[in-house]
Each structure stands twice: as C-alpha cells, then as structure tokens.
Amino acid sequence: MDEKEVAELVAGHVVDVPDFPHAGILFKDVTPLFADGQAFRQVVDAVIEHHGRSSFDVVAGVEARGFLLAGAIAYATGAGVLAVRKAGKLPREVLAASYALEYGEATLEVHRDALEPGQRVLVVDDLLATGGTAEAALSLVEQAGGMVTGFSVLIELAFLNGRDRLAPRDVHALLTV
Ligand SMILES: O=P(O)(O)OC[C@H]1O[C@H](OP(=O)(O)OP(=O)(O)O)[C@H](O)[C@@H]1O
Ligand SMILES: Nc1ncnc2[nH]cnc12
Image (cartoon, rainbow, N blue to C red; front, side, top):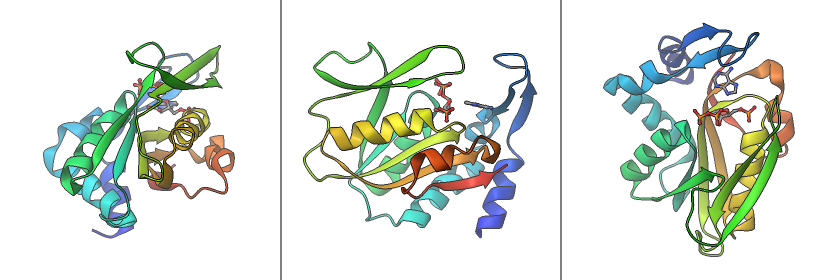
C-alpha cells in the first residue's frame, strides 16, 4: 500500500467521539483499527517499511495504546519491546520524565537498566497531540542510553503542533488530520 492508501485505511477505521474525555475534545478512537486484523497488519507493516526492519533493536511503546503497536512491530521484526510506563508501575529503579497535561501533570518511567548503551530504538504511539507524551518518552529512551532511530504514530493532530515540540526529530504519522 502507498502512503495515501495507508492514510485512508487509518482514517476509515478511526471513530471521532466528541466531548471525550472532556468537553471540547474530539477523541480519535482507534480501537476499530486494532480490532481489524487485516488493517492492523497493514499499519504494522507500513511502520516497519517506513523505517526499515533492520533500523532498530528495540521498539518502545508508550502506555497504553502504544503498547499494542510496539508489541506487534517487535514481534514482526525480532526486536525487543520496551514498555514506557505510567508512573508507579515498574518495580525497580526507574528514570522518570514528567510533562504538562491539559489539567495537571503526568509522568512516564522506564527501568534505568532497560537499554544497553547505544541500542537503537523505534518509539511508537497511537497518536501525537501536543507532543508532551512523545517528548517525555523520547527523552527517557535517551536518558536510558538508547539512540532513537525513529518515531511513528498512527495519527497526528496537526493543529496542536506536537511535531514542533519534537523538532529536530523526524515524526512519521500514518495519518495527519
Ligand atoms: O501528544 P499528547 O498531547 O501528549 O497526547 C498524546 C497521548 O495521549 C494519549 O495517551 P493517554 O495516556 O491519554 O491514553 P492511553 O493510556 O489510553 O494511551 C495517546 O495514547 C498519546 O500517548
Ligand atoms: N484527541 C485525542 N484523541 C485520542 N487520544 C488523544 N490523546 C490526546 N488527545 C487525543
């Protein structure tokens, strides 16, 4: 599938839910995409093809929806998978990165020994909005000694300019709206 077909595939499997989780938010529900085996395989293959299956040693997925994509890409390519977790979930010494939310603050964590120095890491998530989550996740991979070789999301909400926050890193989005 070419990029336009992949974008159309994603768009055809996303449901817009107004006023969730708060009034004024148009929530992009990607659960139908994950539920459709053929579509899920096609988006996993598209991410792998964009980066090249030998360009990373580990796939980092951001809790929680990012886990679904990361696990599949890792399995399909023989890479390891790193769960970038929300605060308080990991049992051993962690690195932490906090970021602002619409209301309050959130923190992501990885185990301090999660990566070998220089390991190449593809970071994935389902959606890029303000970029706060991605910025924290990318920072944690680097603090843990990894080298971020790519960042992919299924959907980019362009009006929130999350890409600018991640510059100069490249952002690969299957669908930009
Ligand atoms: O670019 P940002 O403004 O940071 O928003 C994007 C993040 O928001 C969602 O995570 P969230 O933790 O809200 O939900 P989840 O636990 O269902 O993944 C989504 O999965 C992204 O990780
Ligand atoms: N509009 C949105 N839809 C789905 N997930 C999100 N995370 C942040 N903003 C979102």
